[in-house]
Image 1 (cartoon, helix red, strand yellow):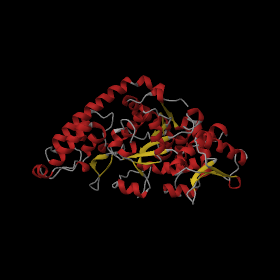
Image 2 (image 1 turned 120 degrees about the vertical axis):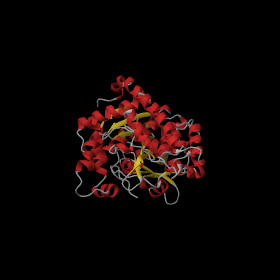
Image 3 (image 1 turned 135 degrees about the horizontal axis):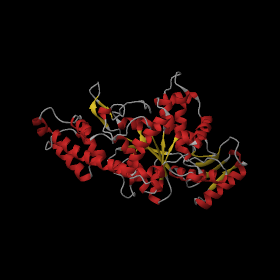
Image 4 (image 1 turned 90 degrees about the horizontal axis):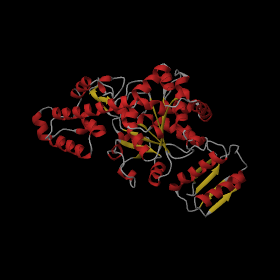
Length: 450
């Protein structure tokens, strides 16, 4: 399998993808002890993660955590895009600070948009809708990549830790690719990591909710976060948990650093059985296990940032959601994902009601060839783009269960199901459109000018 952040592909086997790329499972058990998890988690629309445990732990304890995501202003916002902002709003209600990048540089470098056009599209299509959906501007910020110099500066510095061979291996870049395009992933890494600056909350658990095609960016960013650290916290071959000062020139002498680490481990984290080895630049933490690594690493990252003036980047977590299926089949007879570049496949937030009606009525379903066959055998909701509208956006648990039961037992035919989905979609889009107009005065409040 290949994941291309700029490609059009649809994923056919999410379980296989999760296994092949070493992603963690997101299911009901993930959120045990968390009040009112989002339906997107409970229904496993968000199906996989990298390093999410510290974020969930922060939510359970009421500790600070951050959310960072971005929008690509290269087309109109559709219902598939809404999945990300729904997660951001839920995280915000759990106490997160939310940061959203308008990727105007990437739209310019990888999609051929002008910067002014990308910025206008980002504001009108996306930011206004985010506010209408309920994003609280008092606990969130939206910024443009090209206007935030600290992101560009950090991207440049992160370039010290990655070479061309690595970029080719991760992204499959050909030698003909333009360097501006190559730089776009470093800009994304800068976006993700800069929210851990001391003035924006410092090193803390952060999560990046994105589509699974963006995983290459997160793999790169997590590696870069580790590369910039003064300390590494790992499990050794003999199953000990060790804190190691990296061999590069440290910001203080090693004995002083290890002394400070000892204090943090004993005083702040409560570890009493410590074995220090100055020659190996190491402290071994007795009683610790692999589940303690993130806790220790976070405390040391905060020390690096607050006391040593280093970045102290704590590895960002990521969650991955399933793509919404396109409403119509492609040339191969199979539906791909909803796409802004293929208007017939997507329901856009600002679509005219007549266009919405046409799209829903033409949508591919999981129905049988004849009414008699469907009454006898039932339909397949998992092959139905209309059922996905209910699953992702339109139905509470009770309604969803009714639709599923009636669909699979043959009580419900696709025509009547489409009409119900159409009515619910029209009502939801009407509500969003009205709130968009009522939210225009909040745009200046949420959009940063730098």
